[in-house]
Length: 98
Image 1 (cartoon, helix red, strand yellow):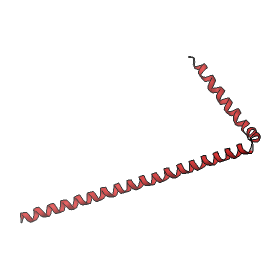
Image 2: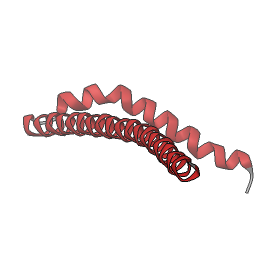
Image 3: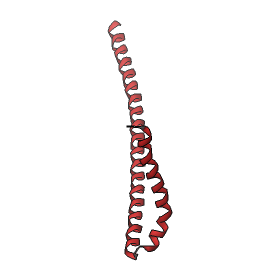
Image 4: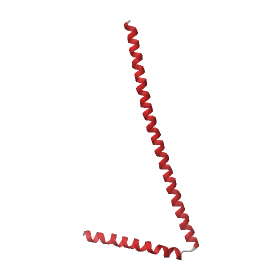
């Protein structure tokens, strides 16, 4: 298949979309009140879904940040516990040597 033949349908689709965008206002004017109400509700639903998605993403990011912070704290605690264990071990052998 030739590349030119593949490009033509896409160009036609793009032209159709831009022409369709210009006719959208005309189409809205010819719609019944019920159709306009349903479109407005669908737009509202889409906006609510987008807001809910953004809220979920921000909440999960905060949770992820908290886990990272807790992981760093546990690593610090683990290092401190290891240092104390080493000191206890050293003290035990110091007492045994005396």
